[in-house]
Amino acid sequence: NLLPLFLLGIPGSSMAALFLVALQIQGVHTGPTIFRDFAPIIYAIFMGLIIANFLNVGIAHIIMKPLIRVMKSDPQIVYPIVIIVCLTGVFTLNHRIIDVLVCIAVGFLAYFLKKASVPMAPLALGFILSPIWERAFRRSLVSSQGDYSAFFNTPTDIVIIILLIISIALVIYQRVKSSKEDLAI
Image (cartoon, rainbow, N blue to C red; front, side, top):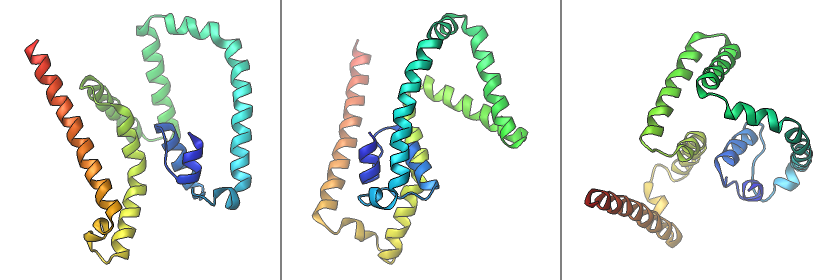
């Protein structure tokens, strides 16, 4: 998962997208030259992951039984504790009530999206990666002097757009087909 992220700048999962944002915040630019330009940082990341795996095995062995007991306990006790810890963490970040209210609003939004069976991973990826894509889109428009046809110049662009339209159409077709089958049953 990390190799496509480091070498191509393409996150393979939502966690990799978060990692990409963290790298860009630190000024590390992904791409083929990352091992040449940022070698100490990349090797430190790999060493940290190796050490974290060994520590994870040891810690998991020690706290596995207490965690199983917590997971089997009554959700009416566990959920309020988790909510209080989350709200306390949000408040202690900037000491503002508005942060707590935003946290609560996002929690309700996530609850209703979950009830509507909206997948969370694409939403999180879009939220995290949208500033990166927007910057690249603006740069492309500036370099083409505002000409949108720059996105449709090469045959590769046209093939990718056609494949994108076909994949969206297939998803819509499958959803309509499954909803008709559900109505027929």
